[in-house]
Picture 1: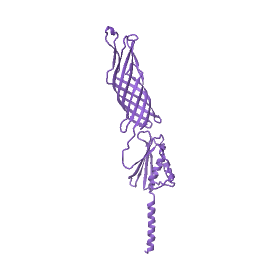
Picture 2: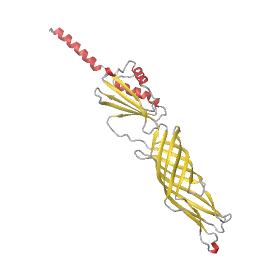
Picture 3: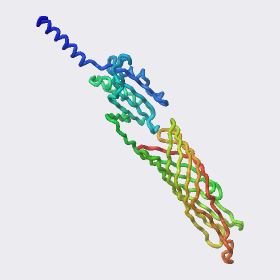
Picture 4: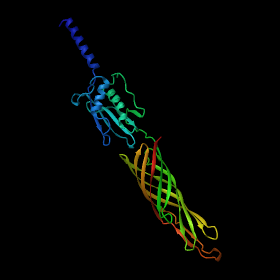
Length: 330
């Protein structure tokens, strides 16, 4: 073979190597929408938008692909937003790179532009898009280069409602409640609040003599819950410290008293997201008193008569309530 033929063969081989080095790795797309994410972008639309962004076909059929962009989209773990995970898998199925995209936007379509950008860069990292689409302000893109534990944010909220309790007072009486909700990572939500009852009236066998009874207190509870679509089901358990007081009416001398009644309680509740962070809820529960609560009076103090029972609280009470809750993120 002459030197001229050798030179020509070397030139052809060099050109072939240059084309191979600059060739794009063939990539296929595998895309899944989890239950409840049917409104999110579908595989066909996502593939079309990726090709439009590059200005030429970028994705190929799985049988022709050397690597695969595999992704899923669905609700985030708290059910308040959306999360998409996209991974690039090599020929043997090994994960080469992974991206996670979160949004608090009510619509999962807020993730569309970010997903198109991420998958385009995974499939063609050396490509230069003509005009990168703006990333929505509420979308956070995190790159996971190794297995790490992402710290979840604290969540705060306020709950207020109207309750009716049976057993703590002579008659069922409405009460208003207000509580602060704290949901730290890896710990069941904590609820701390107070309540104030409208009170009740207890008559004695003596004419025009009785007492006005009031009930107020504070409570602290642990409230684990599970979210199913827009409905949140949960149970709360904790302690309550109540002040049960009375004021005599119609007696010759002023008569009053107060007793502190600690109790333990358990309740079940259901919350429905109404609009944005506002939820409506209903709840039922009960309390078991840890202290015996009773009040007495003297029919004729001047004559030295003995004390008569006025009111004895039940050892256990039940209640039901409804109201609104507003949830925030820190």
